[in-house]
Every structure is written in C-alpha cells, then in structure tokens.
Length: 130
Image (tube, rainbow, N blue to C red; front, side, top):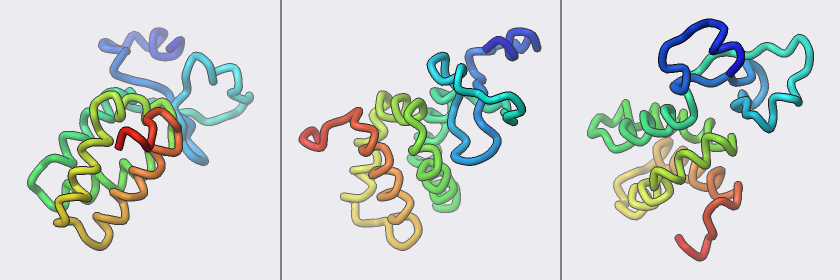
C-alpha cells in the first residue's frame, strides 16, 4: 500500500501488490515483512476485484470467456487472500452448481475441480457445509 499511495493512484483500494515470480501470491500487511530485498513485485487488481470479475466471467454465457476465467481461477485459488474474497462472494456455491449441472467436460471441468480443491484446502469453509 505504501507504493500505491506514493504513486497517487486514484482508487488505490482496487489494486494490490503480488509477487512477479513463483506462485504470484498477493502481498498482505501480514506478509509484507517477508519480502526479501530484490524481490520483483507487480501491481495487480485487488483480490476482491479479481474475485468479482472472475465470478462474473464464470457466470457468463460465453464458453471461451468461462474457460479462461476458470483457468485463471484455478491458478489464483492457491492464494489464501484471494480465496477468502472468492469464498465470501459465494464462489464455492457457484463452482458446485457448475459441477452439478453436468454441462462441463474436459478442461472446463478440470479447472473447476482444481479451483474447488484449492479453495477448500485453505480450510476457510468446512467440507461439512458443501
């Protein structure tokens, strides 16, 4: 947030820093002290904004847009900060409905299930509630 404020970006709450390499996790107040000197970071949309945009694209009628959104979701779901936002927006229920609909096959089903498992691995939602 310090960098964002010094750049005077309007709507700074819509942005966040992420690692540019590796798992590309979001930087949080809790994790910022773990940043090593020389680490490359990149400015990205905030986890909440990313979750909202992906949910909208997943619920769209365009197959290509939905597939790309599910592919991105499978990657981002490993991040606990993003996962919390996505789950708070009822994202788990959306994924469960996609699987239950029986209309997703191949890559689309694979990305949906990967994202679902990544989200559940954080322990934010109990398996008993699904």
